[in-house]
Length: 310
Image (cartoon, rainbow, N blue to C red; front, side, top):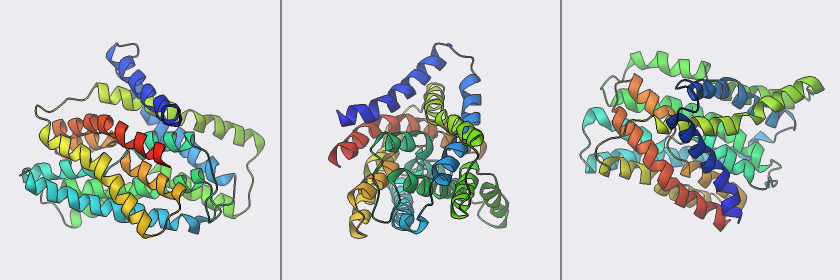
């Protein structure tokens, strides 16, 4: 029942979002605008309030950050190896690799972890606070690495990459909200009741609205003709990546609850924004969309296993 109660609401909301878009229950641009509201307002409010309400032992999240970072780099290298074995053309390799490592942490990972018991880890952080601290820098790394692999596949690596990389650091609301929440808590400040209730209400809308947006985005994607290449990328993202996270976590001695967090985050399906990035940076949009859809399907089994085993 734990698996059903944890995962079913997440994927049912994704399915509902897809139906809303397909059936034209909402206008074509509604869920796209909802995604924008969630990314710029709802998610930052959720992250800020989660951290500002308690004094976080930030250092306790270090092992999780290290595991996520090292695991993601290994998955990227594995993605390049798989692309070479599959003879993926050079200009398309960036799209393949991005799909293999860039997970939807905010709108799939967070809802699943927030549905689990919020136990306290050895360092004093709760599971939810530790997850928030890990997710924000991970999203920034995904943004920077996503730009990097897409440009590298076009042989545009050089000084011209500096500006878009720096821009990502300055305009990433989840990261800015996380830093603000940590500073706020470390200073011992307390939010006025009216502001606390406002931000809490704003944050509570982020996860369900984000999941509806994911479903609506999936419903509008244009799929590739073949499934061999995107299927491999999807399996790397949702099956191989959490296995790597498990190996690294066990090696570094993560406790079970922290190890589960890492594995859930690494098993998340490919982020919808990878399609937008591929579209804007001259990648293969059909491949990007097929990887996203494939990873949503394959992540069901992986996430169910991870939730059920711990």
